[in-house]
Image (cartoon, one colour):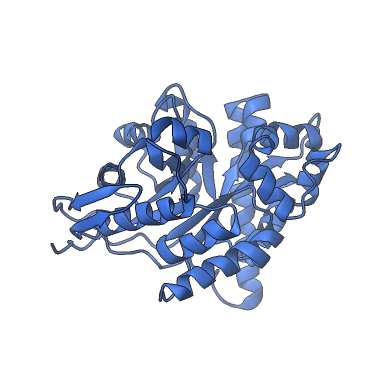
Length: 357
């Protein structure tokens, strides 16, 4: 089956302009609308949602598109035990059709306990499960008829053809070197959370490149990294914000292990301070935050997801959106300044977008 050409992609955004993440599980899509409005108003890179067990993220994004909030979107990440790869590809393509804007469809395993609760037996190899899943979704989106009989899914089908639509990239959640190698071989985007810039530069990005090279791919996947941010304001305690932002994840074994590998002391008496020192949680003025985020880009990150969890939980939507808008503005300004100082335009976003069905 031949895949029709996708719609022409919009002009790429500067890599200095971050994306926006809505990090909670909304009871109703309208709770996310202020963040979609922010993306449209500021021309931020994309609106990302994480897995939600209240309002399902694909349906939230479709609802927002129906309200007129047609912005680039992404999922970081939805959990692959919830849906077959065929359904995953159909949902991702549907978002591209409904929004008319580029989509990043990201997938991950979740915790072993969650996966085992939905599958006949535990994933003996999460890397194999993710690699096969991402490969099948990508092939379906490319218009291929897939014949796959593996340990984690069976698929003998193709998506029916549709007209032109915006491009879809397929992402994989990555925290540790093994999954980075797998994502390098299979994914369009590697999606990371709370990964310090030094760890990205020295560990994950090289493993992504190695996986891509071993698979005969010309380039490694793009890297999209969610970073906790909060603007310094009177009455805000950075340590308290760091704890609010990351406390839940510190209790998750896979996140704690990743941070230990990155040299962050999450087991000591003051993990919040360690997170701040490692730039896992970034605070300061908007310009200071923009300067720190430039370090993430220097480490190999192609798309930064601004994660306002701390302010959203402690002060609410208005305060979180205000922070995000100021940070996006500062990042854009710093990107223009950097481009001006070198006499050239800011680096474009990666053009590594596959043709899709």
